[in-house]
Length: 89
Image 1 (cartoon, rainbow, N blue to C red):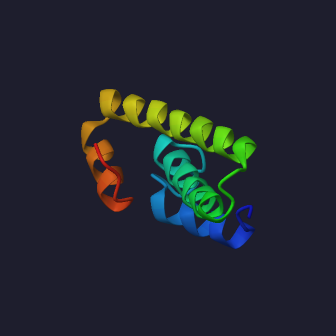
Image 2 (tube, rainbow, N blue to C red):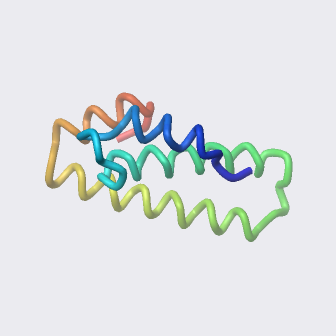
Image 3 (cartoon, rainbow, N blue to C red):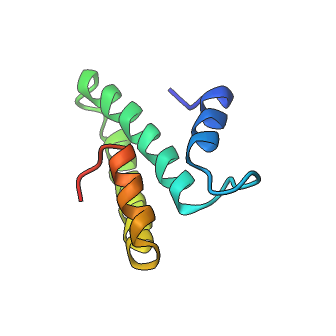
């Protein structure tokens, strides 16, 4: 259920700003989106797993805060990331 090392490096290479970037808001949002999608799939088959549901809500909140930060500081990057990840505004 956790993210593999290969998938993590693929996400970092796809969303990074520069060659050595691993922690920009875009990369963090992409990583959180991947984890959110995995947890959503888990919760469809395990509906009574309330601990994972709480974790999912915390991940969604963290991603929302990062998206709000990105919208305030870099509007074009915000629009690019929500388009590439198919997120709602």
